[in-house]
Amino acid sequence: MSKYALVTGASSGIGLCYAKELASRGYNLFIVSIQEKELADTAEMLRNTYGIVVHSMYMDLTRPDAADILLRYVEDNELDLEILINNAGVFFFNNLIETPWKRVEVMLDLHIKTVTRMTQLFGAWMAKRKHGYILNMSSMSAWMAMPGINIYNSTKAYILNFSRSMWYELKPHGVTVTAICPGAIDTGLYGLAPNLRRLAVRLQVSMPPEKLVRKALKAMFRKKKSVVPGWINGPFVFLCKHVPDWVVFLLMKHITKFMK
Image 1 (tube, rainbow, N blue to C red):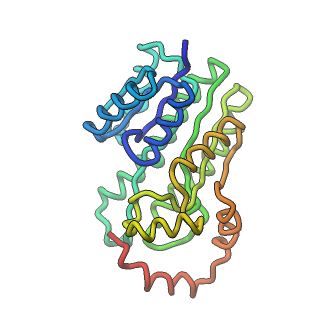
Image 2: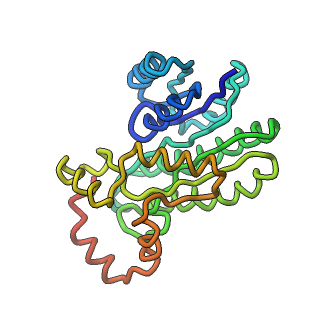
């Protein structure tokens, strides 16, 4: 029986890249997304392209019982689940005091409650089977104190520290938890013009999502606690911890146009 991987937020962006890469390696998939039409199209594409079995579920992962529903589906359908990719997330750039609370709440729910509950439930399930991999998407911003992304970077710091702690808790049971902390990724998330996106990739300031996914899975299968992919990002993390206040205030004057 072929192994399964569960990927959240799999209908677009980085999540779709995870689904394609895992499918190319022969994994059957259980994909979850809040984008109903895109999810159905993705499932059909994966079946036709890779010849694998694909289960899909349209799901708002901010629901308090979302993780319970997903685990119940895995058990009811007897899926031989080996990998959980907690990829679903949101991003916005705006001052907190100007941001509607509902928008903040969605990010808190997805990045903290959902990741925690998914890791708890599936970690326990995998521990009983003495085998499994969990990959949680953090960010290089976990080390940054930056206005405009204060909720984002704080939740990503939570994911990083939570994942590293859970690595120790689950490793004796044959299960590992890996936090991936990428820098800028070449998607439409930042609203950059195509020529600027290409320039950022050439300068290796930004990384193609396919490359990120390959590096992330390599780290996961090597049972790493956490990884900052990209040669330029390691030194940048160190610099983030020592940025003078005047630099942050200077940046604030130039980045308000990206707030939305």
